Image (cartoon, rainbow, N blue to C red):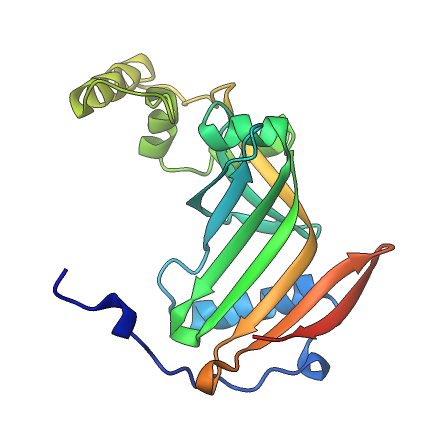
Length: 213
């Protein structure tokens, strides 16, 4: 590589972040920051990294899209037969991370994922674009496929199958809600002395502390 990666560096200059400035409820604090990310036109502000762990203890992660914050829980949708679906079935503990570089901010979340009920999953599925609905039927998510043409052929077959009809939700497709027990709000600051405010749920109450960067 021609670029020396070790020399890549950016100085942060975010606003100070103090526990006294934070809402006592981390969910409301998250919603405040999320609204600010939307106003700042952050690209894919609802994109979040989801980390799961296999039965053998091997972690994996990928980017998914937040589809709601409901009842204090973070909601996303996927194929239950995917790698993340299989891992969450065995171990529901997971972690989420939002990174908003335009605001020099990130939010780290740890929690337990539980499947949403069929009624909620079906209601959201109906809101998806028709192409995405058909794609949910066509793609055996995380399975090895021979080539791209096979996927496109499956998509065409599903288009024909549901032509002129409402596309039903596949049984293997649904959502999760992650109930957090930890949230960390990170604000980039000069000289790498970043501000980190941690919320930890103890005895059903949120305890707030500052962490060293």
